[in-house]
Image (cartoon, rainbow, N blue to C red; front, side):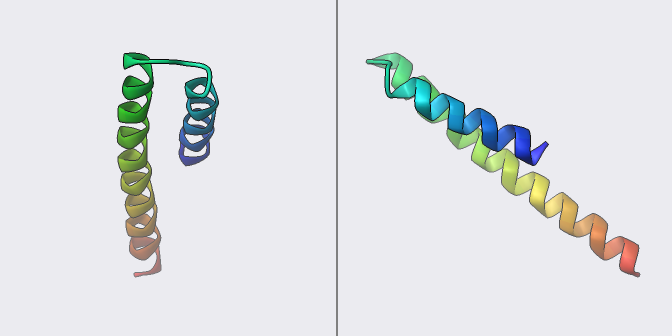
Length: 54
């Protein structure tokens, strides 16, 4: 899921280069939410790894 989210962010950034106005802001906001999701995914992965090691 992390990989897919990163790929979506990169595609959105490329799209943003060819977009103007409010659409750019919407893409920026969505990418911010994606960054937050990635952090959540990573924390969950670390938690699962720690639980397996116990």
